[in-house]
Each structure stands twice: as structure tokens, then as C-alpha cells.
Image (cartoon, rainbow, N blue to C red; front, side, top):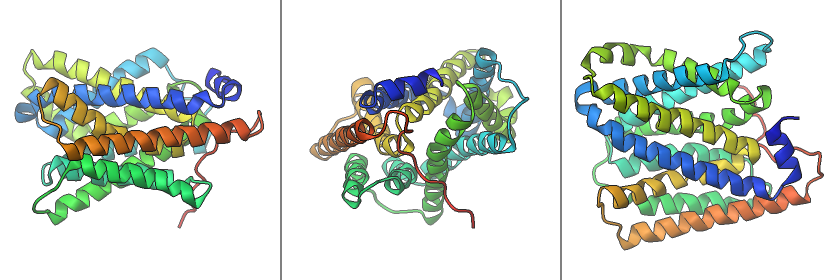
Length: 307
């Protein structure tokens, strides 16, 4: 039994609360990373920055975990590869959506992915109100949008599929591997998938830009993805899928604190609604975990039947 499994069994009510802390720190890391790397978008390109950040994170995680390539089942390797592809697709499709849509709409569309994973894992119909409430909160934070680009919406929905797969596969890879070695291999797969964007971008990075890329890769990918991965391990994909609504909320708060972006009444109401949905999710999950037998695993999303 791993440390995380032991912790979850010994402290069934604490797992969802710990997951909230992990998601909040990971989300904050992503927002700070985005603020740092945005200075490189004009010269390196959004996809180039995304690919190089992923490469930095892969090198760091592989060096720290030194995962073995032997002794893994075909199922475990499928999970690792699919998880990495989901990471890469999530980045590419989201940036493609942002280039054609208002940021708020792109964020809302992407959140439909983990929202679906969260909804698929509810035990009772009334619990659907929790992810639904989080979605309404995200819509309030995002604010009204103007004209909509059809291709941008398509990219946003594609990002949602990738984000949903990322959420679901975090649980699967976590079950099949020990520690963070599976995550490290998946990030390496994601970095390889983004090579067509990262390699051509290398000559466009100025000397001072490499420091920004390293810090951004450490915060926004290596740390954030590790915390997301651990959050699923101590709770479930259903809980974390709802808690991912904290991402746009954290973005709004970071923007207000660091960039001076104003927070209107609508955004404040959305933040309160997302916070309430997150708190209710933690309470429900903690109560369900405490009621389960001590040796039973935490509730998890059932595998999606193949076509």
C-alpha cells in the first residue's frame, strides 16, 4: 500500500479537503506561470511556449523520478501514453480556442470536460447540482461574450474533451503506477507530441527568455500537473473534476491582485458560487468516504465503455 493509499484509508474525511488544497496551489501555479510566459507569446508563439514548457517539465520530472521502462503492463503503458497525449492536446486546443474566442468563453468551454467527468461519477441525482453550480459560477466569472467564432468553439470543445480525458486518466495512471513515475513518463510523451511546435521555436527564444521558460515550466506544468495527479490520488476524479472550477476563479483573483483587473459584482457572485460548490463537494465526498468500509477504495468514475 502506498503512502497516499494509507493516508486515504486512515483519514477518509481529510482526502477531499487535501485535494482542494492541492488543486488551489496547482491552479495558482498555472496562473502565475501564464502571467510569466505571456511575455514570450509575441516572439516565441503560444504553441512554442507551451511545447518548451512541457519539455522543461519532462526533463525535471524524469530526473527526479527516474522511472523504469520495464515491468509495466500494456494497460499501464496505454494509460501513460493517453495521459500524455491528453496533456498535449489540452494545451494546443485551448490556446487555439483563445486565439479565436474571448478568454472567458474558452475557459468555460474547456471546463465542460472535467464537469462531465464529475457528473458521471455522482452517486445520486441530486449531487448533479454540485458540478452544475460550479458551471454557473464559471459562467458568471467568465462574463458576457460577444461574437462567437464557430471554429474557436470547436477548438474549445476539443480542449474540453482533452481536459476531461486528463482528469479521468489521472486516476487510471495513478492506480497503475507508484509515486510520480507514471506522471513523469506521461509529461515526456506530451513533450514529444509537442515537438513540432517547440523545436522551431527554439531559435526565437532570447537569452533572458530561457529563465522565464524554466520557471514557467516548473510552476505551470511540473508542479501543477503533479498536484492535480496527487489530488486525484487522495480523493477521486469526481471530486477533482468539480474542484477544477477553481481554475478560472484563481485566474480572476490573480488578475485582480497582480494586474489590477477589476472584479465586478457578477464575478464576485461567481467566485462565491464556485466556492460553495467546492465546499459542498468536499463535504459530500468526506461523508461518503467516512461511511465506506476502511479497506474500500474511494469512489471513482467507472470506465467508459469502448465503442
